[in-house]
Length: 148
Image (cartoon, rainbow, N blue to C red; front, side, top):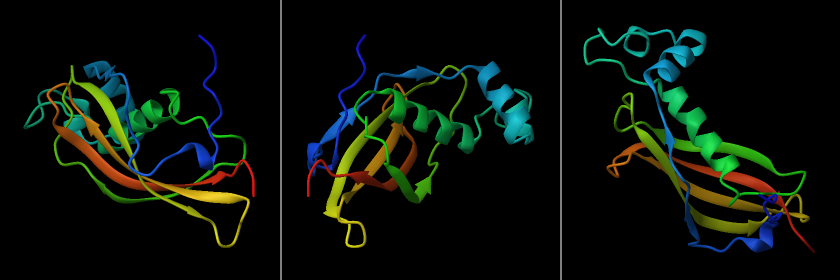
């Protein structure tokens, strides 16, 4: 498989949407992540009230993995994340879930302070195999322009 084509600011369009292939979440994945980063009972044991569920931070990490490895987002050197707004976890992630990411471009503007860059704004929704949203967020990226 060849490397994804580099995408500059000009290569994105407002309203453009993309959906990634899924990744499966296993009980072992949930427990391993929780043991290292979020050791709360509901992330460590199926005997916790409500059963075993993934940490929201685990879901966020999987979302980032899907975003970066999908091939849709392949920026040139110099792209920088500017932050995340409105991060929510509306439903828990259970073992066996197949998660996929839906990305929509919600804004594009030239940076006022760095005219060689544009600001790409996106809404990201992480979905289960049943179409249930388990994470939502908006984010912005400072991304190089192809030309001035």
